[in-house]
Image 1 (cartoon, protein in one colour):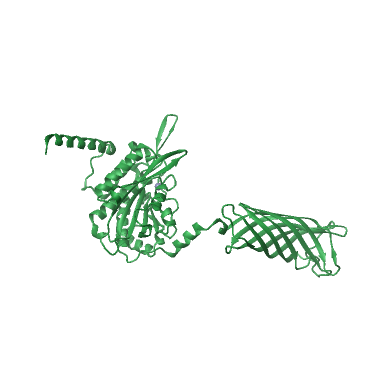
Image 2: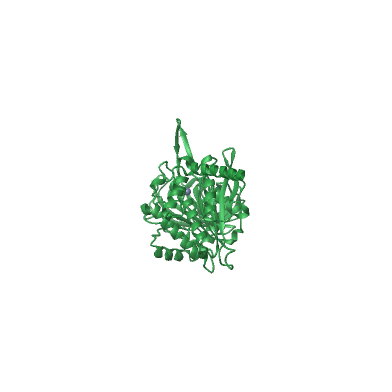
Length: 500
Ligand SMILES: [Zn+2]
């Protein structure tokens, strides 16, 4: 080699060493001889070191974290899609746009029949950064949240790079950015995936895996969103003596699993639990349980290996139901609110062709809005009802509990403004518990009937949170117990309902 070139080469190495020393700080260079838990501790101590300043969005500390992860992906043996580990995107803090970067690598599976399908492991590497108050800088190191998960995916990647025979499907490994700002890295990834999204058959988010012992196990929320996922996990857990605490098919919404689940990809949050100093300045690397992390990493590796060899990886039916629920348009959502009916009431006398004059009526209470189909809504109400009529010598007044049950038949909902028009009809039940008739107390034990049935009908409009309508209620059972004469209650009411 030419001496001058040799010189230059040497110079480059010194710069690289200097850079590594800055990142690594007081730690000696990593050795393959180290045990898994020691390697995990090294990753976490570097990512959660004060020099990385809490890996806040748009900071140099997060930039250094990204560089470290790229180095580790390369060293572990991950391949890059399109020659780059970086998937850049932009996000906004207030009015300013900042650059953000997912770090993405992959390993091809060894089974030609399965290797065009992928399992994805991800961990977010951003954290909260630091605050500055009265010239005092407080760093949130984010060791458990989520230097632990990043260390985990690096070591899982290394395991499969060193043991390619253990991987039948291919593996995508992602360090997500901007999770703490609203899962932005994961959202970007599912919008711009490096492979067709329907080829990603299973996703794991390792988010906070550093507190195994304190929480006495690991949670696998969402594992049952994969058909057969729970049984596979339990088998591996038994074999490795890993205690699995929470499982189930519900996809965790507060970590990077959510955007994948919304796309129909079975997704599992690997999580040692909330007994952790996460989101506090005390989330430091020295508090984590690295033996427990090593357990979680070995468990995850074996589970991924086992799943990568399954004949089919398909979503459980419950995942489809979750997506439908999330996608339900506002017009089809159940809701509830308060309602106020004001208007008038009067009595009719069937045998005398007599109709009394009206008096003021009011009822108020709660309603539920239960869509049955695009056009039909079931709307039960529970009301306190002050009703009555003018009679000879004064007014008839009752205090009642009234329970209308109506079906609305309406136009389809205009979702942007939640608008629709509707007609409705149904029945009501009324129980009266107090009242006066021309100044004397009503006797519900002997003369007056405490219960009443009738029908209701009307028409209305819905806009945003409001429903306004006109309602008539007509009793089909009489007011008097002996029905002599037959007297029936009637109401005509304006209704305003407000959705809570
Ligand atoms: Zn997190």
